[in-house]
Amino acid sequence: MPELFDNWPDDYENWFSTPLGKLIKEFELDLILKMLKPQRGEHILDAGCGTGIFTSDIINKGASITGLDISRPMLKKALRKTGNSFKCVCADMLKLPFKDCTFDKTVTITAIEFIKDAALALSELERVTKPGGAIVAATLNSLSPWAEKRKKDAEKEGGIFMHAIFRSPDELAGLLPFKCITGTAIHFSDNAEPDKAVEIEKKGYAAGLDSGAFAAALWIKQ
Image 1: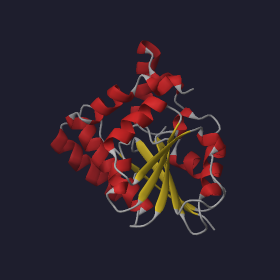
Image 2: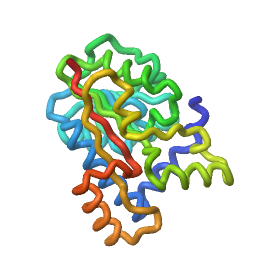
Image 3: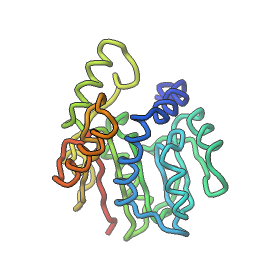
Image 4: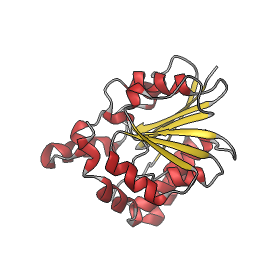
């Protein structure tokens, strides 16, 4: 369903430039980087990369990135933001156009909620990852109050979240049949004051809560 995202690049970018959006990106990126641990010289696949919101930060760690997305307008936006360490491919995550064991690591961030057969998408990521490499997936958490609000707003106003499938950390972990580590971020509400949000986030992270709006999982390919 590429047309679902083709008219969304500007709205997506603009949301992350708001005070709340910047704060959310900071906490989400921190969780992703702790799991992915991108290193200089690594070749990483960012599947469902969208406009490259997180891609540039991974590149800044010294890795080269292949960004894959089903939406050409999204990829065009990503290309304008990134440099020579970024290559883009317009393709479906369910049929990755790469040979087995192509990438040192793979990551997908807030893309599988728009894929019904997320297990197939994750198996494709596992296929193209080298043995010993990390596979990291992040999605919108069904256990978070944010999920219920997004559902209700979509029922009233329409929009992209009409098509979203929210999954819990345990459901995310079950998408690949081997051991994984999970974590969540964004434990505050969408109307929290920035200073209060930071305090809430630190407490939620320290407590290891599974109800953050952003759920991520890490697998290491055997």
